[in-house]
Image (cartoon, rainbow, N blue to C red; front, side, top):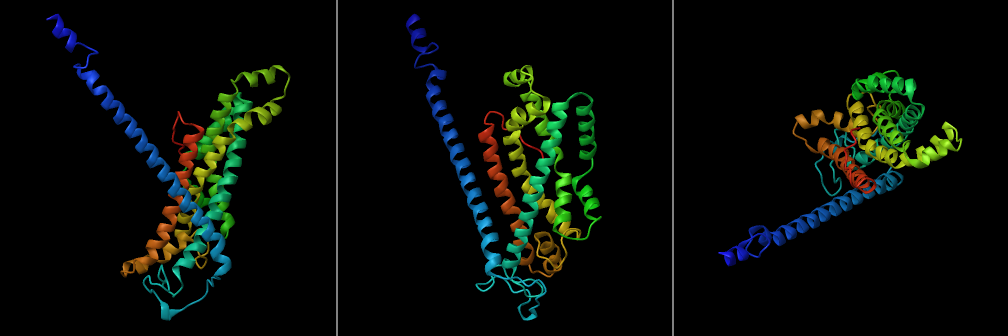
Length: 310
């Protein structure tokens, strides 16, 4: 009996836990390797798409001029072909060229608005956390009030006060997307304030302004930069929505939102390409930018893979 227990007890080769432990280890290692391979493929494909987009918006416009007022009725609504890879629109203009021009406008709005919103949010968040007390409470309550209003509704209100154009859209997007950045920066500054080197600087007689500029802001720059990158896709979607509603850019100017809006009647008639390709130009680049931002987030904060809700 004792020999039987010795050969079948815990920790022996006949023990089921011991027997399956190497298999479980190999399965876990395989899962981790597959996860790393998937992540590397996602980052590589996202980087390739973003690179192609940047090269397209930099190279195509100087080489191919776009006449927004041109009309070629003989080429109206031609399907995709070798001469027109994306087909033509309802007045005979090449859709590929118009999509590239529209993407250039959307990227301009997205990048500029994201930078402006990040600067505003960083300044507000750092001010609230550094001042503390009633200043912090008042500032964050104002942030909560603005956050309670839907971004698109507030953006429509702002754009309606100006004539259609690029810069009213930039102002609208920037003024509606700084709120989450302010919260992120405030949380990071509150966390940094408890660090020993900050206490040492305060004990050494450094002013609040010097502590904020020299010690707190450099610590929040990675999170602020990440928020800016994550904000670019949202800004592109926001601009496309406003242009689709007729409140963004003028209808004759190439924009991804105006291209989709102008193709609605063609879609009802069975012509799918005037809607499909501008829609893909909205979705694919923004997903690629979000993929790169996610990789950056995992690199600067590998243990806490928290979602930044912008």
